[in-house]
Length: 431
Image (cartoon, rainbow, N blue to C red; front, side, top):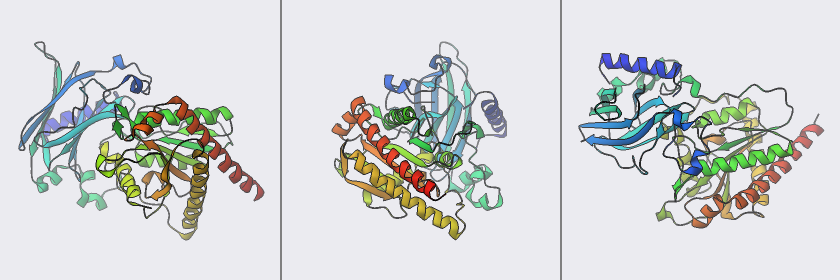
């Protein structure tokens, strides 16, 4: 890692960032994307205008031009090899596509919001490397302020020894379990205190967000499309007044997968609906239509497995590398609860398919299953809905259409009404 002096500087910057300047941001924004940003004036944030890489496979330098100096924290992570830089929220005004091409020790880099008030830059490395130096230069001689990161190639042994204890695999059994040190504890979403409300809780989960754009096509990002859909579904359900509706995110913020599930469990939700929009690589053909997924240990087909693998990497995309959380399914009684929950999830999936197929185009195999982490709450019926393929021209036209969205949202609200009305009636009869 860096020298002892640099470590002290980084630690001081980290404390400043956590205590005074909450850390995260968004990638370059279109007009539509800017509407989903947190309601803080963008002009108040530092502006990043350029970024570049220099060097080779032995030593590589990253330079970010900004209009004012900022504090930051930089750490390395293994498996896969990455460097994560946390900074106060920055308004990135970088050219489209920058970061997709790497150089030297960096395969690619990305940037975005990980929580309100803070941004993150994640570098995917070609192999083990250490942070040889990192610093911020003040503006001088007509040049902007600059954040500079200097990387140096090392072997695997030296790399692992340079990691913080909580990120060293061989030490994990000897230390107390803890979340990665790359994000302050404040990054975990908090559920606001509510007055007693006996209505069933429906949790709507727009996928991706912040640094994790999801799939992208023709200038549209999945994170924005599914957020718009989720907000429309929330508004439709709240208008009826039958349910307490909670969003896992209502702006362009990154939420770890495990926190999305925890929100539903903490609220004892009656239903959890995760919204996504898939894309297929060109080599795999052209699929279209909406698909509804439920949880299964064994994927229903290769496409379901591919999608689950991709969605389950969301935390790594944002710099996290969370292991599967220890399950609290410790005995046969909770195992039975899980089985019952999967039965309810499948029941809702079939009901939802019936409602949606009368309103929107469905995939040729509309019901599938796979091991999605976001569906693993043992006591909350959960489905993941791919509302369409952004890689399909016709689907993309629908996804950006308010008329299509209204029809799809209406059919989903009908399914939720039917499912919860039956569950509530059954529960009432059992009392």
